[in-house]
Image (cartoon, rainbow, N blue to C red; front, side, top):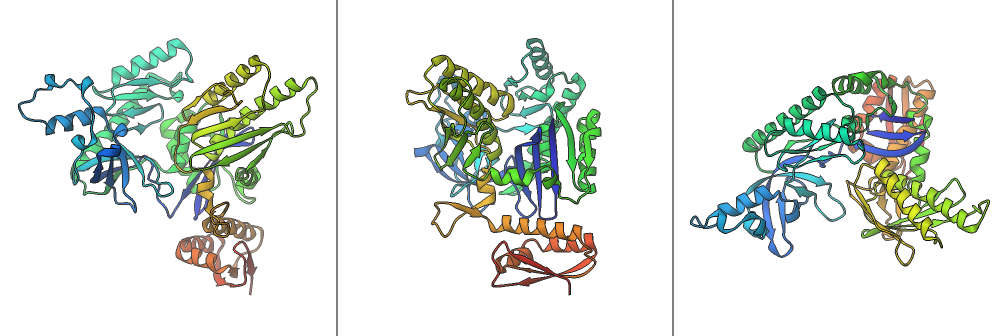
Length: 501
């Protein structure tokens, strides 16, 4: 069964989604670094580059965001272009369908513009921006300036697809569109209409704020990550939403009561210790997801290598020898590998170009069976769009998967200074979080009242005192103790010592 597991601590919130106790997705929310994805800004156009059809927009971040012409709403583009044409030129003289969109005719340096962040900054690049706006709700994703209505492919019944499409079209304001989410299936009309009305009102508020906001100002952001995940993942398949603090449970309970009152009984409080993620084996599975090698139940394995350009996955038979023929062994291993590849792409948040080297199969029927199974698995289990090509002449399967935010490695690892970027080590923040996790466990298992001395590596000491000092205060309050941090130059980054004077 499916579970949503929420571990909230003063230093970080983590949300895991499991199916039959296997980790499927993992999300992190830092309490010191704000997420930009899906946020709306009143930006200022700082540079327009016609050669690459891109504009750079200052949104008040360290690096300017970039807006490609493909991410500019056509209605806005043609409106801006017509504003800049000669007053005597009529719109009939330049039909929209035949017009060539040039970014230099649409945007001008210094102009304000409403933009939404579609992708977080990554490596040396700033945030990717769009004016094709979206506002996600429980049942639909509103597209306030794209007048098209689409239905999730996971809703297969023809009559239900037609019912939902007609309902949404009838209740959308003119000029707006929507994507009907899988959660809409069998939903009541009034609940879907309520979702539409709320999102339309939110869009109207964004427009009003844009008119009044200062340049570079953030004017709208999505729900906190915990509520986003609950909104996007809570369905009939979810057995429980398990939270480790009373405050977080109350917050999630109120939210679920508002959006899906029939499912409030699924929100449950887990009293630590032991650690919630340890109970459900999340931490161990998370460590495994950082390794290049993934073991398959059959004895085979995957080797996953990610570069800036693409991800390459190699499938090996390993110890699996099968019970019949070699071809039978290969087909079974490939089918199991396809299932695991789909899971690893979600779990590691891998997007872009992906090349999979399945084990060569002699029979064309087996190759077709593999591709059909892989496409079906991606369609049923992955919310991000993907395109899979047939097996190439070299026995490779090429595919693309939509990028969204940072990969798991980018979130939890830093480039290794000792190997000049050829490998990865855990980031200082990750070491700090693990140390605080272990420290909390020891406080829970002992009698923490009174004075406690925590000796740590100097870099960890600096990180805690500069960034996570409120965490220490929260732990002191929770366990009724006084914590003294001491920097120990001889300690490794993952080493610590607890003393009770």
